[in-house]
Amino acid sequence: MTKSVDDLARGDQGPNDQDPVHLEEQAFGDNPLEVRDTDHYTQEYVGGFVDKWDDLIDWKARYESEGTFFIDQLRARGVKTVLDAATGTGFHSVRLLEEGFETVSADGSPQMLAKAFSNGLEYGGHILRVVNADWRWLNRDVHGEYDAIICLGNSFTHLFSERDRRKTLAEFYAMLKHDGVLIIDQRNYDSILDTGFSSKHTYYYAGEDVSAEPDHIDDGLARFKYTFPDKSEFFLNMYPLRKDYMRRLMREVGFQRIDTYGDFQETYGDTEPDFFIHVAEKT
Ligand code: SAM
View 1 (spheres, protein in one colour):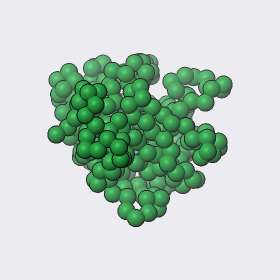
View 2 (cartoon, helix red, strand yellow; view 1 turned 60 degrees about the horizontal axis):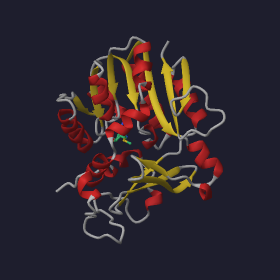
View 3 (cartoon, protein in one colour; view 1 turned 30 degrees about the vertical axis):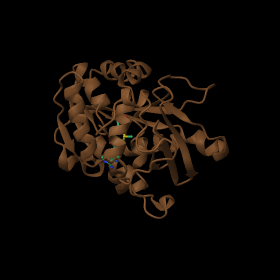
View 4 (cartoon, helix red, strand yellow; view 1 turned 135 degrees about the horizontal axis):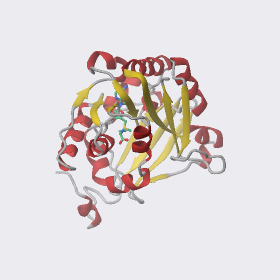
């Protein structure tokens, strides 16, 4: 049975209050640091992690921290149709539907899409149009052309080879109308790589309920550990994308103008943002 935030607040911490709970479903094998494979994401977003994540990440708090940034970017360009390429549990898809955008919700993880669909019903009675599709073969599984594609929540960094990154960007480019816009966000890996592992920063979601911290960092792997209030731990293996490399890839695939924001701000000189957001236009 899934626990609610209320259960956790009452101090019901699950099977064991003291020891970390390693839920079996995430499979990283004997040497997790060798897992550097684009296909592995489907084994990382598994039932336990998906449910827990959504029980604890407060959608309202997320709404407040993002404000209207993405909605403003889309409206400023007259966008009507949006493909949410990394739907996850549906936060942005639901937000877009609420704001009146015609939205298709794609993801390569069926578990995530199932959760997104039920969240759509729960939050506002929306029927999400979900499509199970891997970005590398997006055009095969998703039809039509879109005014905008969004790929948010640090999702793009699940791609481990440059070939997969180029292929994905090319698929996104092809599915956009001639004047379409692509919005991708990513963690600020430059700062993590440059300041080194010793100064690792812990990120908190929804207050202090869930923490995310780098567990291992090298040029080819950023392994993050997520710790929940019941002490259960989950991991995600991602590729530490550098900001300027990402901008170059988008330019090389054909995007003409790329604006990069730091934590939703246009200028980010003085403070180190946690996230970068790239807004890439086709024309
Ligand atoms: N955008 C959501 C959010 O911000 O809450 C979800 C972000 S979650 C970190 C990343 C999502 O990207 C997961 O749902 C995962 O299944 C999806 N994903 C990762 N690699 C993918 C790929 N190659 N093709 C399709 N989906 C992928």
